[in-house]
Image (tube, rainbow, N blue to C red):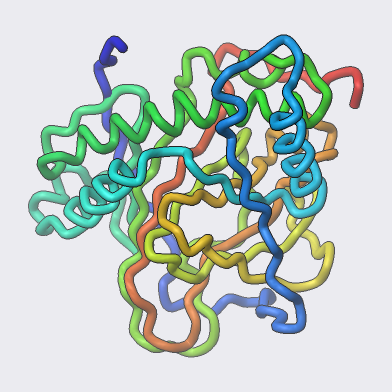
Length: 297
């Protein structure tokens, strides 16, 4: 595979680390959602007619996307690669301030992130970071995202390339390395990442060591109004190689809200919070691709 010349973006997410989450208390009476764990391996090879294995995965994906928009996907990347990516991420965020300043764009706050795009310059990053990031880009962005796009089309009974055609150049996709620094004890829930829906097609999220904090408030089509009343914890899969995957607001609109874009956030409780590491792949259609709702919706 030809290597592309990569360009680097550093994004430092701002959030008020000591801010109590207002008007969004966790409702302990709501059971955490049970995320189906799916494997996109049946979509590694595409045939003219979906196989029984492909239809089974697609049906489970459709059921979850209609309900709360979250699933778990396994076997997206080699475990050894993910281990290298986690170690590289820890090394990146452990750099001294002068080294970080060579990458910095915004004032650091409660969340920090390093964005990998289709082109990157890793000169200021720790040794090995660039190789791990590039390999993970190929596995997730170039591989898993395109398989997911085909699975989504099968799930929705659409032409096989209906979504995949939007991922030719991959020029709007982002692989983001995230670090939420440790927090001292505080009062009530505190926001590490505020309530939002992801605006794009789909998001793949890997969470290191099953770190808690992700919550969802199931809603329709990118809105943030109560649908079931209150926040529910989304348990990390407990396996660093399994990704939490959620529908973006664009995909909800693309399906005329048949699939849900769910409001979610990352919080810390009142006690001291350990550092939290995550890797998110944000999948979005190419810049020159025209998005239009299929007539079947």
